[in-house]
View 1 (tube, one colour):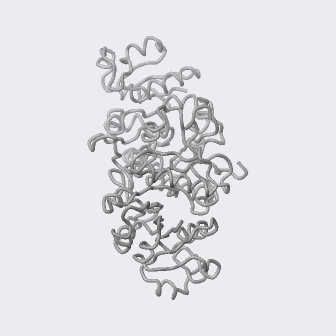
View 2 (cartoon, chains in turn red, orange):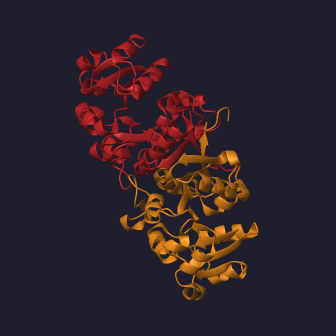
View 3 (cartoon, one colour):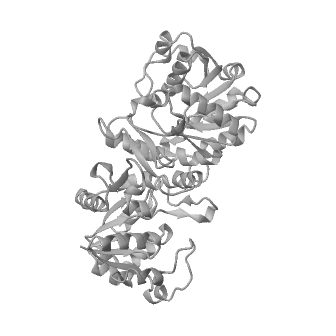
Amino acid sequence: MRYTVLGTGIVGRTMAAKLASLGHEVVVGTRDPEATLARVEPDAYGNPPFPQWRVANSQVGLEAFADAAAWGEVMVNTTSGAATLQALEAAGAANLAGKVLIDIANPLDFSQGMPPSLNPVNTDSLGEQVQRAFPEVKVVKTLNTMNCQVMVEPSRVVGEHSVFVSGDDTDAKKAVTELLVSFGWAEASVIDLGDITTARGTEMLLPIWLRLWGALGHADFNFHIAGARTGA
Amino acid sequence: MRYTVLGTGIVGRTMAAKLASLGHEVVVGTRDPEATLARVEPDAYGNPPFPQWRVANSQVGLEAFADAAAWGEVMVNTTSGAATLQALEAAGAANLAGKVLIDIANPLDFSQGMPPSLNPVNTDSLGEQVQRAFPEVKVVKTLNTMNCQVMVEPSRVVGEHSVFVSGDDTDAKKAVTELLVSFGWAEASVIDLGDITTARGTEMLLPIWLRLWGALGHADFNFHIAGARTGA
């Protein structure tokens, strides 16, 4: 399968490397590939610049958003929430139409100070905004409730834990669930919350996730829904 | 210990009955005790009217908010989120001052349609509003992330699961943790998130809780933080 990962940050790199390791063809989409390849400074989180990561992941392509989106069969949105709609505009509705878009972004809003709040929130969500802006795209919100290392290596967290899927298209959610299983997720760990409006619920997990990260001092934790299955 | 449970709904009744069963003295506070005792119709959720519940729980007192608050040593707020500040005003700052207030309420807002949204949310929380309005009270937000039957009987949910505490007063959180242990919670299940601003995180679990309730078809589930403890 040809996967287009939108975004060059740590989430995008982690997803791209995992997908490539599973034998998929992967291209990362960015606003300006030349600018991305010219970076020499660590990012705001202290991650090495993209070109350095690329050395160890040379099988992953890098293209402008539109070219990357036109090429891929499945889209993975790992851009920052504040940049998502603009990135998808640049990718182009025609290049995205009819495709599954796995939306991992969270609409973190740093303008109200730390810890970040969310925008949109409560009566709307980024997942819904994306679905409304690109009605031809099959948006599946998932994986946005955990650290990116846990996304692709669930065994980092000891014990049972959950991953949520939200989306309007049942077949798209089924395909994404199969991808999650290929990442190492037990099928029983995948909880289908319902349509894309349920993305409000998963995006609104971010505030407690951030506080838990602070309280626990590490990111190898995750939400588990105890009692989700009969006799579980 | 003398516990005052503010609110006559299903959460208040469940808490009052549990506290009484553990040998505590319990008074339920309500706006107008005569009106509460005159109810003959089930409430909006189909629960029997308060007087019917009282027949089986005659050891639990019923008083107006102010009398109930003046009498109790520990306060338990189970009023609806929209009514909480008004109820606490009626209880009276002087009657509450210096006491621990266990805040179980969630600021559900039904004015934006179903499912309910939250108000306040995101950059504020009901827990913080209560603490700001009553600075002499030791507010501990807890138990607001689960069904009330699970609050007082955690073994209803199979497997490990978590209960969060948020509050500015360390001793108050310690006392509430001891109460939770007396309810049947393992001490290791209690996660101290930090100060009262972390109540934003637990209140914002409500949207996904409501969706999970719909998706699972039952309320005997709960959040568990997998990987919260080293080697857990």
